[in-house]
Image (cartoon, rainbow, N blue to C red):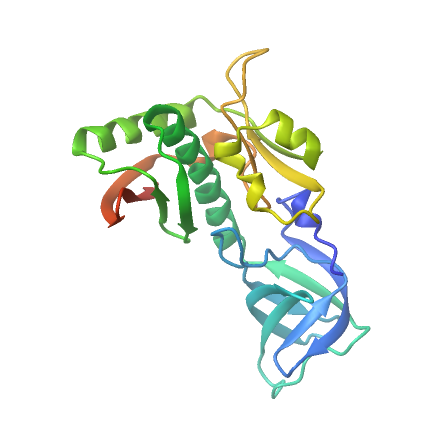
Amino acid sequence: MTEQPYLADSTVREFDATVERTVSDDRVVLDRTHFYPEGGGQPADHGTISTADGREWHVVDVQKHDGIHHYLEPGEGLDGELPEAGATVTGELDWERRSSHMRYHTAQHLLSALLLDEYDAETTGNQVRAHKATLDCAYERFHDDELEHVEDRMNELVEQARPVEWYVLDRETAEEELDPERTRLSLLPDSITEIRIVEIGGVGEGSVPFDRTACAGTHVSNTEEIGEVSVTGRETKGSEEERITFELD
């Protein structure tokens, strides 16, 4: 199974790995990767994979199957060939894309916690893009004054430079300590016994965390890195469900 060191360190932009095997005629599985596979509302990373002899492939998608599959488009002059099993390759992330996803994903955590705390609106879905994000929640309808308040509060939370960290808890501890409305651990298969937690801290020594939830995505290490938040719209998505769209400066 592919090692996933991005779960511990999301700041790595370049790494070496070994090709474990090729799949079909357009993808490879590596022994380890810092490319994030699509999941949890966060798109896959893009970038390149290259070999020491100068061959290069564009990583155009990353998906979890039986291992993490890196979908490749061959560079100039390769005519469809893939790096062979056992080859050492260097992976390089499209950092602008990854950085944007990290900022938006962290902002989505802030927004989910804020809406649950102040509007009792539980998040039902989310989708991060490179230049915007949407969040669906259980709420009848947001009015203009509420959206203005949400935007103001989001920017307050960003400016407070709250620390963001991630760590692993055993499932029993997570179920005892965390808010079930935020974590929704009951939806996870029983086979998952260790839970990766993303925590947005409080302000000041000894303060209570603003948010703690289960998540396998990548995030910035401080809310200040998110930048200015603009709530750009809302739409009704069904009975008592709203979608909020926001963008980052």
